Length: 190
Image (cartoon, rainbow, N blue to C red; front, top):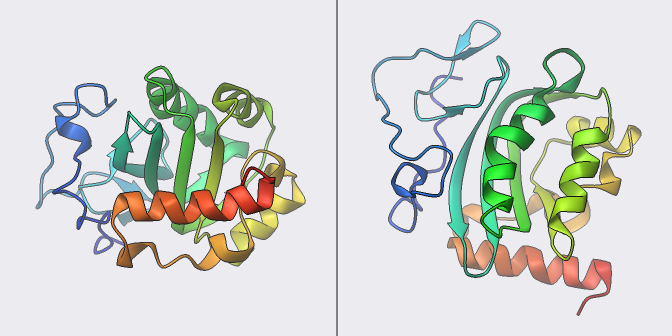
């Protein structure tokens, strides 16, 4: 796991540590010291910690004018033991929604498992985005199955074209436009 880096090709467009509105503003990173881990497996030092012992993330891009953010995750999303959704919501999402972000693209191909506990933070996040949306792209099938089994798909949009989106071949605005187009059709907004 230590070789899995957050996607870095968009750093010329955006870096969270240089965004004064980001929860990770002025954070510095090591390329050599691996201090964080998921279940005794070291993870790359470029991932941002949010208070969870099993889930880490990286804000890859934020567009305050259009109101969207793209966030990549790694680890185990465990609401049952460590209430990871609370950390995601309080440490990252609240900061971004307070700045007008109401469309979220969550990249989950490196999320290993999902364990459900409750819907309160998902519901709060869903209410916070009002006219926006939350899209989960490229999560593993067993993770999506677990989310679906616990009705998380009421709050997060996933499935279909969102499960195999070739996001690395696009620039951030292209990913946003692709997801928006899918969701406009799905939600009847376009």
